[in-house]
Image (tube, rainbow, N blue to C red; front, top):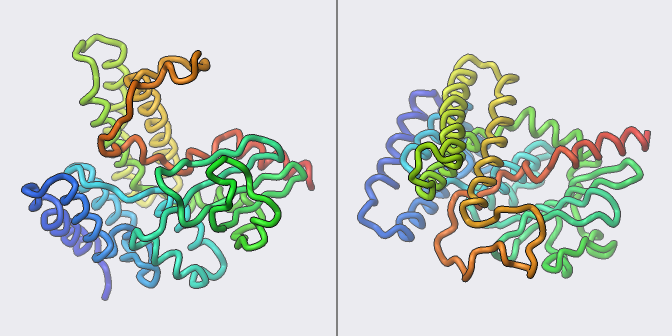
Length: 323
């Protein structure tokens, strides 16, 4: 059956009304759990994926409508590590059907992934820390001799201690690409994280609830600037997708990442992280006591942000040195 923009929009409207707006009588936890089950049942955790891999094969126009609708009504959005990084990388391989089990698990929200970057030998390992043990690890290696690769493997014994995998740990890994730089650039070009544009609205809503009451205060002015930029980016994303200007969408998602980073910086200041210097004694800049509140949108980190400009520069430099 052919999917039209109108039919996808009607389906999205009905879905949000039925599985979110109509459940306000439920507690927050039960409402969120019901929403998560509905996303899986109706293949809306990854609506842009092909049918055979757990999605609905929706166009970018349909995705913009759905994610903007979710943002407008405060619906929980899926984990971007799996849906916007791991899944698209698997779909980009020569034989995506080889990874069908992984893709189906991502579409159903049944697998958690950790992301680990190894820039150079003996460099600190960078990791997207999860609150619970991950089922799989996406490993991006960038070696000094000019080689780089992306692979998946099970969590290794030293991962929780932030130790890189050993040669033995890597024996069972599955290599997705022998050129990490090329694959990440293709990911950035061909798999735009449209949901990231609207996920930022949740970040800014959180900041607004915690902001100071002084309208002329520096914190409030910075937040107003981000809110104005966010509104402009949402409008621009709508227009570019309607016009089919796909190349210009790259700028929208790049600025979306900038908004996210700046909102995170502002959030850290609100929580008490006021300096980049080390705390002496350790921990003095952190909030006192544990925080048992539900995880908010600021912990839904845009995964590609971990692939920093430094990392991409190193990929390019080492590749040139190795050629």
